[in-house]
Structure formats: C-alpha cells, structure tokens
Length: 305
Image (cartoon, rainbow, N blue to C red; front, top):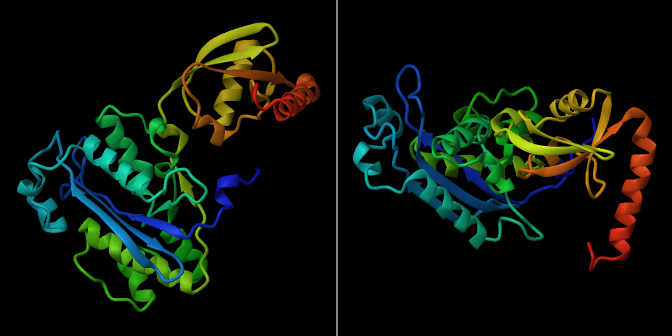
C-alpha cells in the first residue's frame, strides 16, 4: 500500500479539540449532540498557547441535559439553552481557524484529539443530524492526529488508556476539571508539548472512515461508453467493483479526466457528477501514456489548464 502524502508532513501548529456531548449513564441519547465545542491552539516547540476557542452548543433533540451529563461535565441545561446551534458553532470555529491561517495556505495546522471518537464518530454524526455533509467540511476536520497513537509510539511499554493516564506517565498533574472540554483541551495540549520535548513528531494518524461519507453520484467512462451510477462507499475497492459491474470486465484502475489515479484520498474529495475514466487490465499502459501526455500538456499550457 502506497504511503499517503498527507501522512508525511510534520506539524508544529496544533489545534487541540475535545468535544463534550449529551450523555446518559447507560446508552447514549439518539441522536447524540455536541454541547461544548472547545479548542486550544499551541505552537511547537514549547507548547506556547497562541489562542483558545470555546463555546457551548445548544442541543436541538435533547435540550434538557441529564443529571448524569451535568455531573460528568459540569455543564447545565441553562448553560446551553441560549447557546449557538451546532451549525453556528461550527461556522464560528471555521472562522477562528481561518483567522489563524490554519486552513489552506503554505503552513496549515492540524487538529489533535485524545482518541478518534471526536472526529471519526461524533462530528460526522452531528453533521448528519444537522443536515450537513462531512464531505463538505474543510480537510482539517477530516484528517487529524490522535495523541494516544503518538504517546504509544514514543512511550513504548506504557498504555494510553486516556488523558489522565498519559498525564500520570509524563509526570503531569491534571489541571481543571476532567470532562470539561476546554480544560481537557488544555491538558491534552500539555501532553502534546511534553511528548514533543521527548522527540515526538506530529504527523496525521487518522481520518474519517469511508463509511462516514455520504453516497455520491459519479460518471464512469470507458472509451465512448458512459454510465452514471451511485458510489455507496468512498473506497477504492468499492469504486473498482462498481466499474467492473457496469462495464462487465475487470477494471483495474480509475483515473480522473486529467490523468490522476483515483485512490481513497481522492475519493473523499469527489464532487457529485464527477467524471472518472475506468481502465481494464489490457488498457493500463495506454491509459498511463495518455495521462502522461495530459499532464505534460497542462505543464506546457498552464493558461489553458
């Protein structure tokens, strides 16, 4: 399996994020909703805190927080009653990231979480509940660093059961209240800085799984034949299987119309109606040559590309 280019970059501008959500003592509410949206921006080395973002979020489906939820997080129903909705909170967070030039640009930032739940599970689920597509989120929300994985790599033999165990292992004391999002962000920031001082490098470890992306309509072309179809899962194997069924032959690769091979990373960025070129086994060499010529033509005529 080829290494993904976005896993190679080393990040030094870290956005620590730790959601708090509606909860019960037993099974989580359905749907579960974010009630606190906090972040702490730090810079390495040193872990200097550049800025913080924090807002409560008003749950729409379960506006009355349970006693268990309040005891766990210290967040009360009255705290969230007049808070922004998730959509407004997310838009404010995006604006905050943009204000610090953490989205796009030559030196984008990365989100760091304690576990994968926040961005692999909670954010996609909340987006679905709010009628937003995870595919439309800036990429910073879809590829992130799980500090537990960094801890496991640089503190071999130590188990990262959670934030408190990592703090203890690193000789750090818990500050603030556990399960209050902004306090957890500050403590995770201290963990990240301590690991960096021990030699840790921060590269992407995780991304939104294909199953969390909505299905999408694509156009598959082979020669002069085109088929419009719905891709149920944004995974290369699923795309190849779909193409094989449509063209009734073994499709081994799929390209964009400008000659780029389509893999899992490219599938997450697809827009509805995108045209893709399906290539059978015996057509691979010719397809690669056409792709090479296409890219060479773009390089020679940048104004026309």
